Image 1 (spheres, one colour):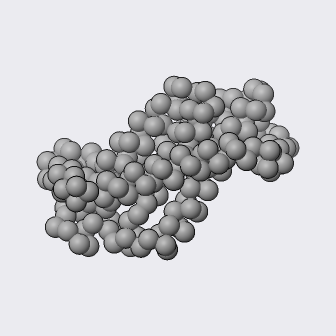
Image 2 (cartoon, rainbow, N blue to C red):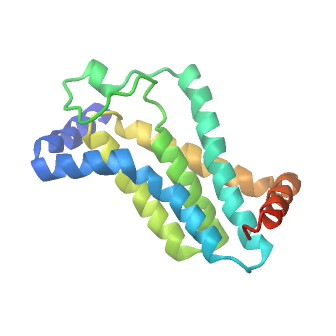
Length: 186
């Protein structure tokens, strides 16, 4: 079923506007997430520090998710679909293992932290964006659907762990906020 869904979605790459747009989203869509966190940080100048801690937790969860993905890539080195299936590949051909998707893990970690924080607007927009990026990565031929689902799962777990470890992270987050305050970034 994973292969069949991959081939169906990847077949959309031959439709000019879908392939072009999917390639653009797959490559540049992930930039939305650090820019979103930066924008929320800047927009929140003068707001209470708990909000800033949430933004830092989102960043920490995303980086944590990428670290978990590295370990999973080593443990389960799944070849990219274009290496084993007749796929339409749009853009660069990644050389790292396919499972789980870094894009999906990074984006979903940030989305889940924002949703858990209670920012329904940006959390929902981030979750929808993560889904669109994930589908676009399948369309351009670099991930199976289960790679995207695995990335979403990693992101969700890392976001939950980040919230569970709030007491452990607090000194680090306080230090970062103190440095930001000293540098007049708050």
